[in-house]
Length: 502
Image (cartoon, rainbow, N blue to C red):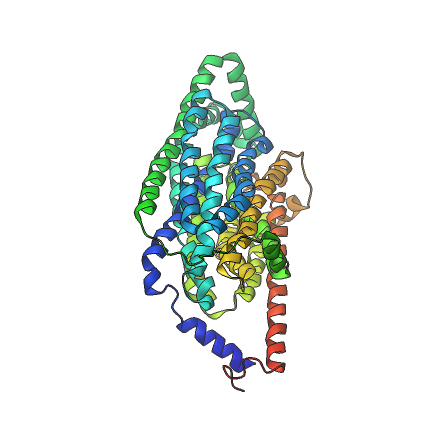
């Protein structure tokens, strides 16, 4: 059995990750990963921005994520059927078109100053992202040997955080930093010296009350401030729409290989029966929890910074950028080292354990130690998505993978549901998990001011991603166990004896 494992590992290491004939289409399709990464991470800060611009609750503002990731859930299966019937290229062209349309809808949404029209725009934009992800992920898997499929997808996914990082930088330096509502907050804090002795959450409540009073006593000035801020939000979406249209033109004129051509009619129920396995269904479940955890960690890191540490929103966004840099580093390390030598399911369970420990640290450690722990979570999350994706689709034909990918893209609905739950926890009254007592004792050792410890409900809300990482780890362990049993069964029955001598 050891010889078999060594031979398999050597085969994986020596096989080409991207064969020469696929280099150009691989590079072109990989550019899409950066495009949807940008959309994902310029959108996350809108949860906090819209809360202040429209004066709504954390849970209401979390509808941004519900609309954004709900678009994936709505369009994943239709996208897979279109791709299965036609081609990956068709799916990509439709995806880019819908992406551009959704981004351009920010123009009427900002002009009408309608929060719900912004939700519609995000919903349609992610129709396009659903087509792109449902097309690009299995397309990348099919561009070369099956034994290097996980590394190939992980390599492509490594360009996703580059787009995400650009989105975060734009959000920090162009959006959050340019909002007049942020200037209003700063002015209020400077005008009230007593705020220096209050908890960050108490200061936030006082400033929100002042903003609400301003909207009632000076409605025209407040409306002008809203119009300015929504114009700031609109600009990057109009720019990215232009970029997406340019990429659409490149795909239109490029010849792309069809690695999954099929002339036979689609037999949906037959495909579904082949997908009815723990590896696939468990993978869809794990992917749902992973996306939920990722979006929660990257969305509410801003709330953590503002409400727990007393930072400004732009300053908290800088920590989000640090998390994305950490994520990007993990992607490259995972592709070049971890997944090159470690079985994907074992790597997944180990990464989930590390993420769970880091999340627990974010909950229980006081001050900056907790914020640093949230950043570290991204290191462990870095290659989870492509690893779960390839594990779930392992063994499927390219055409079955087209429909199978729909379930994995539908699983992105976790990003629509779980942030809404976390926002609800943050809006809940004071929670008591024993965090204050533990933080107080730790602060005596770490020497961190007590004003950085509360409120407990923000930190306690990170129990949700902690649960998510436990689920992911269990999936990795079970897949590892099943794979070991299958190898043992093949050896005992003599299969593969020629390839793997005793």
